[in-house]
Structures are given as structure tokens and as C-alpha cells.
Length: 392
Image (cartoon, rainbow, N blue to C red; front, side, top):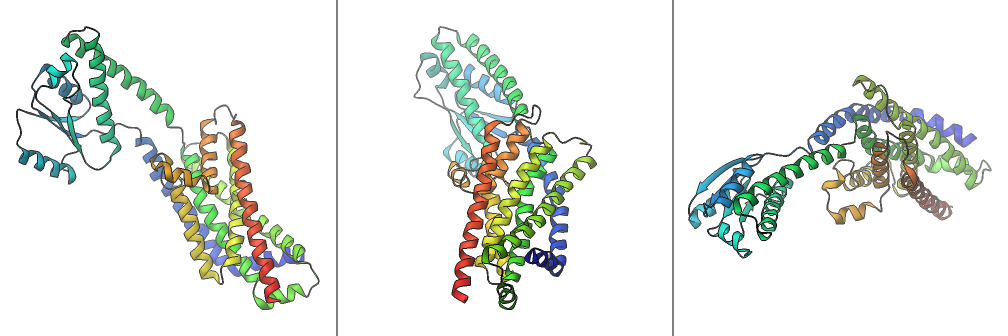
């Protein structure tokens, strides 16, 4: 109890630091959520590309393919042979962003398709590895594959082109339905996702600074001669930082609820589950802050280490960048970090917010976060115990 009260009294010495960080995060989170919410709305919207079609074949197939692309893209069609110098110029245009996509339909493409030959295929050029460019290439391949199936089934070219166009139209309509279902994250859930950064950072710095203060030589010596054992001293400290963590967690939750009310969302589906997930993250932040304090030598080092660790996890675990856009290797690495499981928990709640049945997956995500917290606390205690023995 004496250590518990001493920690709470020590908060006064850092109240300005706490206030500044709280105000920064409280102000920045809604702005970040606005940006992420807008990006989330647009992520599945089909992007119109500036497509240049070089039609060297000028057949019924090449004309139909250009017309099909023109339904969804901005297509410029160039008929006839194009010199290699012109093709190099077009490639430079693509590399510098003047054109988004160049499709070359070689001579004999239509005849080869009718005869069932696959040795003549379109060529394409696209800038970088944009998702829209990849989708364009996939769409062209689908068109030609569908057409080949109809032609091999005995259809005439005119009928095969007509049925292929209808198939792709139906596929587009189905894809739109699926993509709209895929956009589940509300503004509140995006804010909870962003709290993976704000709450972790605040607790790491708060706990790290407080723990360092209690490791100062004079103060640590006075506490040791009080007769309290190592475990009782740390038990009181953990109780105090838990109280601070709960207050900080409910502060960020209150910010989310206030933001939701100000934007007309008076009910946040799955709120109890969001609170559970946030409290699990709170334990991670407390444990990580305590571990950092056992390594750092001063407040500046705590700030440096907290920024390095938390920011790295946020980029890798999908807090700042949607995890769907990260490479498989990065996603695999993220599985070994607690913020990945917090962020996955937010998505699980958002996905099942209507029926409220999150199942075993959500429980596993909570347990993994708590396991990370236990490892962090155990590491911090081990280092603190070794330091205390070494320093006498």
C-alpha cells in the first residue's frame, strides 16, 4: 500500500507530460480516423486507368476487347503497326505516370484465337505494381480465357464475344456485391484500431517514466530499508500502474464514443467487446512499458525505445497501413507481435458486430495479448531483480 500511494503521488511530477501526450493523441486520433475512413471507403472502388491500346491486329476480337475495356477505363486506341521507338516512348510515359497502362494486341491475335493457338498473346506495360494495373491484366486474361472456352465449344466468333462480354458483366456485378460486403469498418472501429498506437505509446511512456523514478538510487534505497520484500514492492507498483492504465484506457474509449456521437453514431455495435480488447491492449502497454523501463537509463531513452518499438509494430501489424496491402512475409512476422492480435480483434468485432457472436477466435486474440503482457512483465521483473542484486 505505501508503494501504491507513492506511485500515485509521483504522477503529479509527470502530469504535464501526461497531459501533453494525451492532448496530442486525443487531437490526432480523430484526424487520422477521418483519413483512414475515407481511404477505407475508396479502397474497393474501381480506379479508372488511362489505357492506350495498340491494335496491330484490327480484327473483330481486338476491336471487341478494346470496346470492352472502354466501358470501365479511359481507352485510347491506336490502329496499325507502331515502331519500336514509339513503343519505347510509350514505356517511358508509363514509367513517368503519363499513361497508366499500355496494351499491345499483336497481328494475328484474332486468327490464333479462332484456331485455338495460344502462342500469340497480348503484351502489356504498366507502371510499378499498382493494384489497378494488376486487376486490368487479370481482366484481360479472363476475357481471353472465357472467349477460348466458347470458341473451343464450337461457337462462332461473334456469338463467343457476345457471351464473353455478358459473363464479365455478371462477374463485375457479383464482385461489387462482395466488395461492398467487405467494407465493414465503421469510423468507431477505425478509431479503436488507431488506439493500438495511442494507448500503447501513452502507457509505455507513462509506466516507463514512473518505473525509472522508483529506480533512482536514493528513492530505491529508502523503499528497500522500509522492510517490504521485492515482491510486495513490485506488487504495489503494479497495482498503481494498473489503476493508471485503466483510467487511460477508458479515456481513449471515451474519445471514441464522443467522436462517434459527434458524427451521428449514437450506438457503437460490439462496444463491450471493444472494451475487453482495449483492456487486453492496456495490459500489453503496461508490460511493454515496464520492460522498457528496466532497460532504459533515463526518460529520454524511454521515449526513444517506446517510439522505436511501438511505431515499428504499428507499421507491421496493420495499424497505420491496411494489412491487406502488406507482403505475406511481413504479415507472418506480424503474428509474433501483440498489436497484430489487437488489430485482428478489432476486425473480428467489426465483422460480427451485428450478431455479437465473435466465437473462439476473439478469445484466442485476447489470450495471446495477455500472454505477451505476461512475458513483458516477467522480462522486466527478471532484469529488475538482477539489477537490484548487482547494485546491492
